[in-house]
Image 1 (cartoon, rainbow, N blue to C red):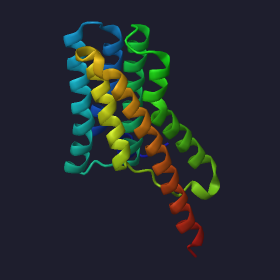
Image 2 (cartoon, rainbow, N blue to C red; image 1 turned 90 degrees about the vertical axis):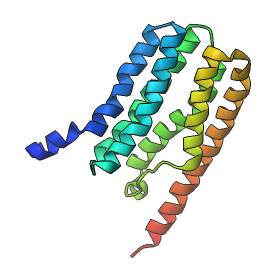
Image 3 (spheres, rainbow, N blue to C red; image 1 turned 180 degrees about the vertical axis):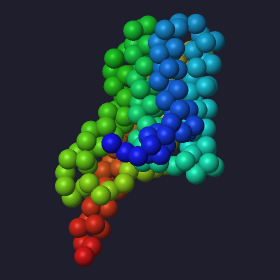
Length: 183
C-alpha cells in the first residue's frame, strides 16, 4: 500500500474532472431529452479539455491520470453509443465503426502490458487519435441535430479509427525496435 501522499495524489482535481465523465455518461443514457443530451456532450467535451489543462497547469500530471482520462473517455463514448443504439438513432454496424479505435486501443493496451518487450513503451495521444475523438463528438451531435450527416460522419470516424489503429501499431513497433536495439 502506498504512502498517504500517494493515496491523496489519486484525488487530484484533474482526476476528479476526468472521472466526472462517467457520471455524464450515466446521465446521457438516462435522458432522452435533446437539449439535455447536447449539454452533456458539451460538458463532457469541456471536461476532456479541462482535465489535461488542469493537470499541466497545477503540475498534477500523473500516471494514474494518464490512465483515468482515456478510461473515462471510453466509458462516456460507450454510454453515448449504447444510448443511441437502444434508441434506434444508430445501427449496430455504426456503433462498431464509431467504437473501432476505442476497442483496438484497449486491446493494444492489454497486449503492450502482457508482451514483455512492449512493457516499457508509454502510450501517448496522437493527432489522428484526437481527430477520431473530434469526429465522434461531431457524430454524436449530428444524431441530435442533423441526422442526415450521421452516415457520412460514421464513415469518417470508421476510416480515421482504422488509420489511428495503424498509426498506433506502427508507433509501438518503431518504439519496440528502438528499445530492443538499446544497450
